[in-house]
Image 1: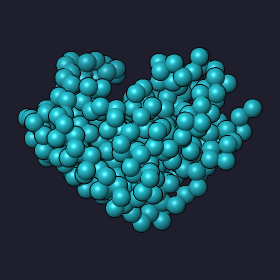
Image 2: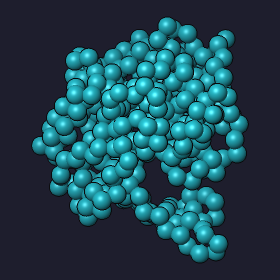
Image 3: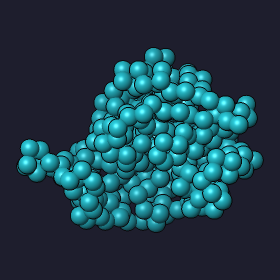
Amino acid sequence: MPGCRDAVVIFAPLPVLTVTIEDRSGEADIHVHAGGQGVWQSRMMSSLGVPVVLCSALGGETGDVLGHLLPMRDVTVQTVPVSARNGAYVHDRRDGTRQVIAETAGSPLDRHELDSLYELTLTEGLTHGRVLLSGPQDDRVVPADLYRRLSTDLGANGCKVAADLAGARLEAVLAGEPDLIKVSHEELLEDGRAKSEKAADLVKAMHAMRDEGACAVVVSRSGDAPALALLDDDDVVEVVMPTLEPADSAGAGDSMTAGIVAALASGQPLRRALQIGAACGALNVVRHGLGTGGGQAVETLAERVELRPWK
C-alpha cells in the first residue's frame, strides 16, 4: 500500500494449526495452514503491502508445525517458546459448508510465559508505533489483564493501539484508551452492551465505549446491514459495502479490521481506511482462504464502498 513506512505489530498470542478438506473434482484436497485471528489479519495486511511483525507463543507438536507455516511475505515472526500447546482444528468443507471434524483448544500460558509474551509485544510495539491486539481461539489461553497491561502501557508511551476483541478483553483494552475498537454487533449483544441489533441501540453502545476510552469504534453487522462507525470527530456513518455473492463468510470481520489498520498505518484518513477495510471484508467473503485478497482488487472495491451519515 503506497505510503507505508513502518510495520504494524500484531499480537496473536497462540496461533492454531488448521486442516481444511476441500473438494477438487470429486477428490479430497487437504490444506494445512497457520490460523487464528491475528494470523489471518497479518495475511491480509501483507497482501496490501503493509509489513507486519507477528508476536506469538509456540509450543507442543502443533507449535513445531506452526513454526514452519507462519513465515509469510512481509511478515516477521517473533515467537516465545512455551510449554503450552497450540490449538488445532480439522474442518471438512467439501459440501460447501464448514463441518467441524475435530477441534482442540490451546493450553493456558503460565506466568513466566505471559511475562515473556508481554515483554516481546511491548518492545516491538514501542519500536514500530502501531499495534493490533487480536484474541486467542480459547478464552482460557491468555487472561484479560494482559490486554489491559498492553493497551495501557503501549498507549501511555505514544503507540497507536487497535483491538478486535469482545467480552472481558474488550473491557480490559478500553482502560488503555485505544485508538480504534472493532467489534461485531453479535458480540455487543452477547456482552450485554446493546439491547438489540437495531442501529440506534448499537450506536448507543458505541458512544458508551467512547466514554470508556475508545477514540474510534467500528461495529460490523451480519447479512446486508451496513457496518457502523463512530469517528474521532463524533460523526456516525454507515459503511455500505459492495454486494457480492459469498463463498465463505468466515473471517470477514477480521479482514475488515486488518484493512482499516493497514490503511491507517499507510497514512490514510479514517474515512478512507473504513472504505479499504470494508473492501477487504467483502473480498474475503468471496474467497475460500481466510484473510486473503489482492491489493488491486481491494482498491477497486474500495471505490464502491459508500459512507453515509447515520440518522
